[in-house]
Image (tube, rainbow, N blue to C red; front, side, top):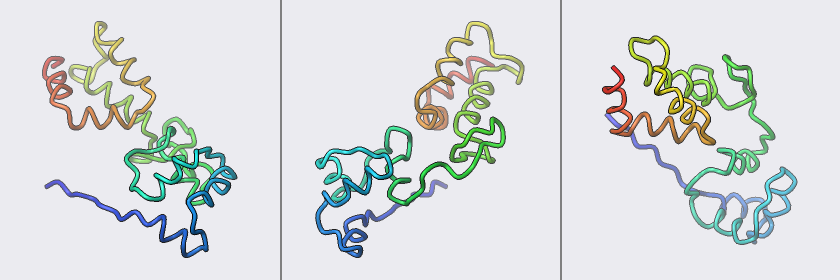
Length: 147
């Protein structure tokens, strides 16, 4: 069973509760937290639900919540990051899942597939590759070809 998760974007309402009635009021508050957005970008952020994350996968949301940095560490690599699965960061989870995908019988990655494994692991956005591996027919087909 697939569960759908929804949310209501209430940034405008939260701003009004704090006496902020112009979207430009957020510009200096975001800048204090290291987030630089144009007035137009802030307007879209206030008036429309976000379509995607910030460049680092959550910078804007963290800044709005007053969280300066990730408050946890990956149990595998010890890097500060938001945990993704079983206390591990998305990069460590991705590395293990790519290994599982491209390794017959849980051994090592086949030599001809090592460049593919490196490209998948070294992606700028591990969430995108994890999502592709979970949902894509081509990822499932790749698993069938490797085994």
